[in-house]
Amino acid sequence: MGIAQTTAVSTPAAVADVPAHAHGFDYADQKAWRIESGESQSPIAIVTKDLKLAERTADENDAIKLHIASGSADVIDNGHTIQVIPKNSTATIRGRHFTLQQAHWHAPAEHTVDGKRYPLEGHFVFKAEDGRLAVIAVFYEEGAENAQFDAIANAAQRDKTVPLANFTAESLLPRSTSTYYHYDGSLTTPPLTENVEWYILAKPAQLSAKDIADFTKSYAHNARDQQPLNERPVLKYQDVK
Image (cartoon, rainbow, N blue to C red; front, side, top):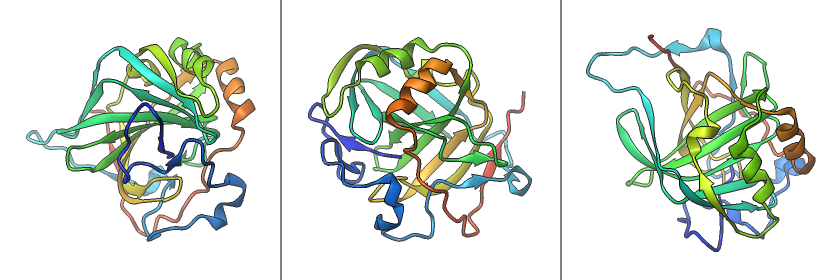
């Protein structure tokens, strides 16, 4: 997960990975990346037979609810990915309020499920009032055209913040967010900060073959290598419907 500063949005130091114009790390030389701690890093390989099914109780809110406000956003190609900084989108994740800081994409997907690797993975980066970071990760498979993703890709320019008149985060997510995998990890780009909550949606969204091909022309491999689980629990929250 890469989080870059732009001239249009003030990004807290705990969230910012690198300035958008200072391409300070190389996906081809990940061994050179400095890890601050290293025991709870992301991404990981998800193995469903090893997952623990989360116990759900009537008085516990396990839902992921997005409060979508259609509005404007800023788009930038920061040299590591295409990034969108929305003006107004929030979420309630397991009963807690978060604000969407930005969204960006990796090719191929950074996480795998039982060895399956999707062509693209989106990271929707949220921040709570206490500074806690949470990432909703979305897998993308080849399918229908996505007009919102197409508009973002067309607007993006290298190292330049470009306004996007209309942005709705919901258009980039699958219809159902009820089933997801959860673990505690890190950012996936330097400084690789830990204590990041990950919520990986089990159901993929769709992008057209052209959407995927156009993104990978610029970013054929902007994915971090998978990291050891180190006995961390990975929970599955199952759709009970």
